[in-house]
Image 1 (tube, rainbow, N blue to C red):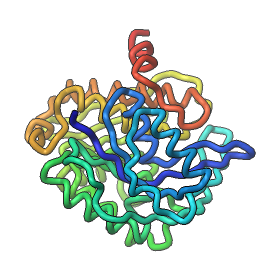
Image 2: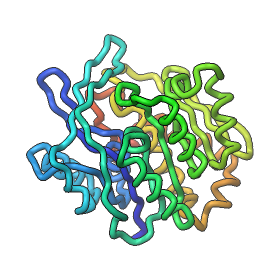
Image 3: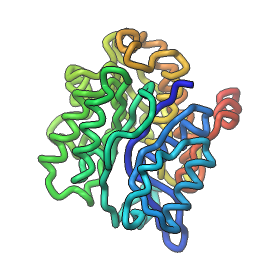
Length: 302
């Protein structure tokens, strides 16, 4: 069976007195696992109570946690504050590292992003891993910027752009693009990024839907009407839905790079619609509770 590989942070979100498993890459891996996709996850957690909770959560979604992931001294945490509009702010206790190349067969795709892409020293290992796999695998990336963890903004932006150049699919929020380059409109930045190498650059725009750029043109979808409980995991759910849709179209894998670059606007629009639906189902629930295949299919029939 062909498998995907997700690389990045896993942590425990602490909101008031509640604790939830979190981390942007973890959410993407779990989202794909719940959709029935075969995924391996490489992260950095400890052999402690929080680490075991993360392991149980990932494996319950059908995701295989790579054994080298359990090498940290303590499992990371993020204390979250939810604002009145459902948005979240975070304070992190996190050390990000990776050791070696995961001992798995060449994956269909490699996804990374967020803290894993910019935080020393682990981000250097992530970049090396991407370079190792990019000939044989589709590379996907979501910057998902965490400003509170970034001490050197210029260095972080350079690392983000380095990964954009090496990626086939980039998903980014409008908020992240404002942070990365406040002087330019987000869609202009996305078009520039498309010229750096990716086949698809998708931008989520909160209540204004999503837009994606590809060689064939521009695809747009509106936001689905839903009562927002909170936005935790919304972008990760969008990423998982987008990857699932492109996987279903047979467009993932290094040998499918030319086909991915040739994606038609109609096909990209349909993929964005699935991604948007996945995100809508997530924001209607508390926490990053991403939908499974049954929930996604039921909602698509409404």
